[in-house]
Length: 303
Ligand code: HMG
Ligand code: MG
Image (tube, rainbow, N blue to C red):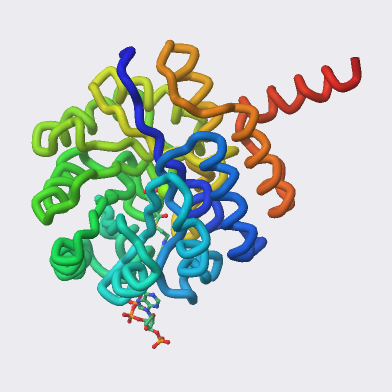
């Protein structure tokens, strides 16, 4: 497992979309700047979705423009052609469409069935192709759904394959409510890898039940090398009640570096970015690594 792993930073999007405190675009730009300075090379910075659904992401166009000159690749969510056009106008080079493996979540999140969502993505992908914009695809609820309960691997395979066949360059598999355990994660990833090349899969695991690192490790054993994570473990989805944030970027970096896999991320700078955004939203970080390092610093300052 000594080859490289690509981390896609989710903090400014998945991280902030569920926070009660709205973070203004200027502060989101500063957050992205700090993340890039820490060494993150791919960052999801916003969403062009209904402002009624997710007021936290209003101003994503301003954020896009504010970070355009930074040396990183920026992603944004788009649910339909309207969102796509707004993203393109703001200079997006990569957009992400998002489907679900369960009908209940699809309906709650984007107000349509899985099949309807895939139809909606077709023109998005077609426009993107002619505009030279890359499209990433998400599948939510790959290990369980807050509305429908158990989700079978085949349901994930079907949606992942549809997104792949549509033309998405990478498929990110979301354990949206963080209920998965390693053997289930492995079984699901193995099933999807039967239809989508494993090199084009990403793991997007929320850490609600504290299983995300173990699940990521199981996925790495299957050969998956792309990990979505959020600084400090920020995040959640307003349409996934009870779900907490993505696996913390710091926790992932600590695990990978401990395995001898260089991430190119400077922990000190990442910690500073997390502590600042946590101060702004008025909520301490949940990441174990962040808390351990902050406590260590405090002790060192006292000595
Ligand atoms: P709808 O109500 O069915 O859509 O919502 P509609 O087409 O009937 O439009 C309703 C209104 O929304 C209209 O405005 C549209 O113009 C507007 P009105 O006439 O009422 O003033 N509208 C838009 N505005 C801005 N940007 C747009 C847009 N589209 C329509 N793109 C819709 C359907 C998909 C729009 C809505 O349900 C929505 O925006 N949902 C987004 C939900 C969301 O962002 N969820 C969080 C992200 S997903 C996630 O977190 C999971 C993930 O992390 C992976 C994982 O963890 O599993 C990715
Ligand atoms: Mg998510």
